[in-house]
Length: 61
Image (tube, rainbow, N blue to C red; front, side):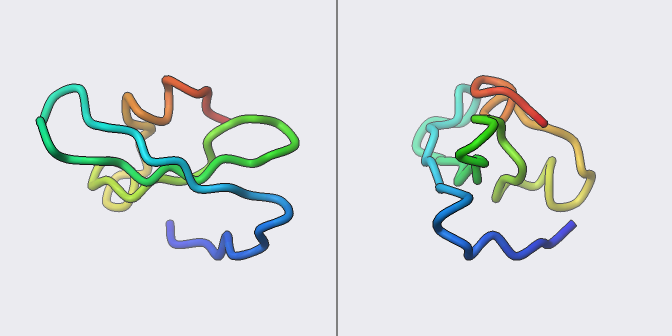
């Protein structure tokens, strides 16, 4: 699930606060052209490949 999103012209990282756990933040990588989330720093995405609420809040590709 680990991909390289270092091309800053195509992707941006957005920090979104967790709705479930206070003080926890998700670092969501968003594709600039489509406006959709492509990756997240959370356990749901890293371990299971499932889009979390933070990713769904901006849209998932």
